[in-house]
Image (cartoon, rainbow, N blue to C red; front, side, top):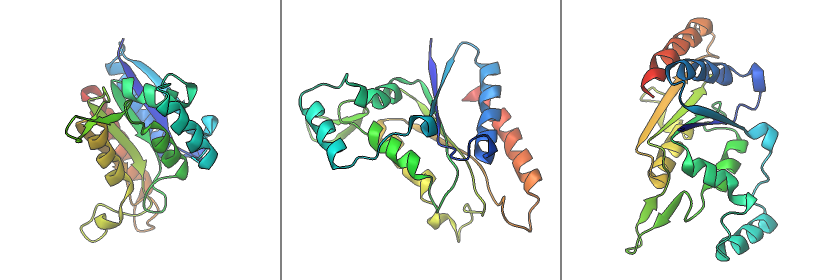
Length: 201
């Protein structure tokens, strides 16, 4: 059975607009792909510890000993083995919440999610062909004059290249905190886009 890994970085939980959009996508995906197992990794429940010096010391020692089966590397093994990946994270401070950055640092493990060939070139080792970032933004950061300020989606797209995931996709509702906009209409449109995207993802 193939697996879709859902990485939930929606810090506000069920009050999160991003999570509501992600749930709509996942409900539609399950209907279209009943044969796929959907596994959720809730970063708020897990509370991975940042890579403080003592954490890095343990990680480096285990990696040097070739002990990649240790629990510390479980998130990286799971990520590398997923067939499809969905990341839900709100747009915070031009990027995403710190809890997602901690997770991304934990899964970036040489010989699990990426490696190097005999010429020293980086090679992605992840199975997934697609990664979808689902997010909501208070402002509009898709405009030519503001797109340069957006660093969350761009960072994940770059990591996909590092991990060997060829297809990065973005589902985004933005302008939700602009008082000139009808935020309910914008979110409803994004919900429709989520349902339309699910069958082909």
